[in-house]
Image (cartoon, rainbow, N blue to C red; front, side):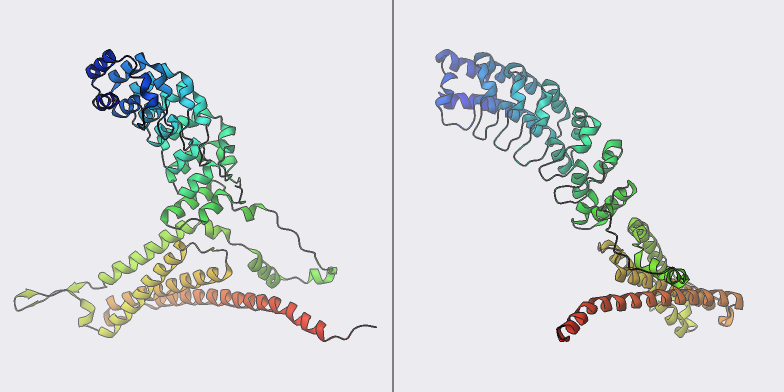
Length: 454
């Protein structure tokens, strides 16, 4: 008898169900004694057999709150499949409390509807019992965090209306992560922009989780790619900082200095202090713009390499066309080789800068700052050299007017002077770091060799 009942529920055969009920009116009452994993109403809810489900609920309304082997009600299954009419009927019969029933994972029917983004079902469940959205599953995530993690932005927009602005900014999971943390960790750009349009979430953007990390810190812990760079740019423009930047630095004890010593502090000392203390945070904020600039320079060099000054010429040999050669190779191969060398360096250095920028290394690090500065200056020098060589190749007898030559040479000289200054400052900074590292060891050795005072 039970087997026939389940077969009828699979096909939604109402006539077979009525025939079974006429044979034995206790058929549905004996379901609690069977070993099946779910009731016929569970099967009907999954299959969407609404008429069949109505007959079952009319005969035995308690089936609306029956549990399967995973502690799911028929409402769980109907919500997961987005069957709105079935959901409405189950809520009507099972009362509003059935919306808060949780399965073995701690999920309500609203959780399953939101994760599958059945928006009409989500609205119906919220209208029936808004408290269902506040249930926390075994994972410790709120339903809003789950929508963020699974990138269900449309369901998220429906559910956020259940919290006011202040509550929305402070809602966290069991790890202390706010909604902004979750969006940054998953690098969901659309959700990130949506949250930052809300004043309360933007004002609370520097909140830290239980590990003491802001949303920007949490993003840095994730694998770095172009989406991570875009998310970083969005967070920084919104005023989100790293946790270390939010903590006030302790003021070091200042040694006693007389007025005359302070007065003698000149331009060089102030410049040196600026080099040591400036954290170059503006470079972190402009990382995306630097990548675009480097790509433009590399693309220009790539185009110049494939389209050299003077163009290319093609020839036929034995009735077949050969690949076009640069016209300059027919005139002066040495000058063309020099042009190719300059142009290659101009293309490769920006590509190396791009690799450095997308690798995620902190640009406030003095070494990487120096490497980036040297690479940029070198690319500029070779770009000017490539231009000068191209103009000479296109001029009669390699003639270039003196004004152009002097402007290019002065520009390259200026880049060289700037590179020398940065290198000197960097070398001095390294020497000072090494000296400070060795000073405690030297003092310890001296103290060990000093006789005891009597």
